[in-house]
View (tube, rainbow, N blue to C red):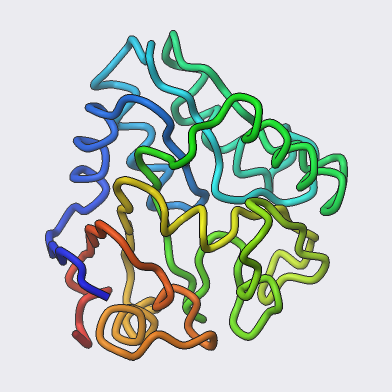
Length: 218
């Protein structure tokens, strides 16, 4: 992977700066570090007109559930700004029906390629809800799929974008913090592309925003 790797003490602020300037079709992700970026971006930009907000993945729970990626993003950002068009993954429909509904929505309202995708990386190297060795990594026809059994907690079913959608995006930004991610970061950004490290399969215009702990093994 050819990535522009940027190491700073506060990568969430760098992500917030990027988010404050986005337009077009943008996919958000879950996680505590993205949450901090969303909270800051909300304070930097009130009017999000011209932004369609999509999601990289979702747990199959209602939107007000503590594990909902939408719920987190809504509290941190979306409910605090105006003008954005929201496209929520309906996790409460279950993995298969929820994935089909989101794929239909992408087909009806989405572009051929997203303009901006924000990604995290799990300690196991997963991105979105695409886990090491899972068959969904090989999906090349569908844009959205269900994941019945995830590779790590919380062990609830998921809905996720597929690799072709991620890799077709105009801009891909990784936001990663913490020493527990250091080995995964090394494998993603310096190792060969391989399905046991799903993040290594990302390809495109990639920026990686890391804190020193996450970058320690690069």
